[in-house]
Image (cartoon, rainbow, N blue to C red):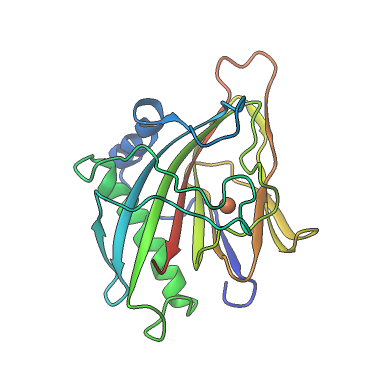
Length: 225
Ligand SMILES: [Fe+2]
């Protein structure tokens, strides 16, 4: 991670019970709303959001039920940069909060181990949890190969059904892929140093005859404010 700028985790042990995984997967069927910030005509992404304040010392996560709007710069997101986007908030009382926190803490531990979060950096961070479903045919990353504008982030596959595509990659330039990989099993994950590498995921297509065709991911982002 420290040298390459990314880490691929196959079926990682986040310490989730079967029930906790079920709570997480259920969010995508019950709690998402259509992404109203997409350009007109694009209705293939639905999402929900949670925000945590993080004390780096001890990795103490505190849910924030009144987060500020989510803003990316135009340089990292030419489609939605500069917009103050507000997403449907999953309240801290929702049972998935503890599940997201468990996953985010494990990611944060790997970032500490890679010296990406240290006592030399900010003492407090914000961790964003984005619950996102892309329905096929759809584009997980319509902005192309990109940075998120964060310190670091991670993508965790929750479920994929009835689709092909959705191949992710880490890039050192917009045109040079360091490694591509498909997250296929529940909780297969990709952790990245956002300042060092770019990322992208290819469009998804429905397989013939599929009753439902979608890809559910949990995206975690760590930023300084
Ligand atoms: Fe991204």
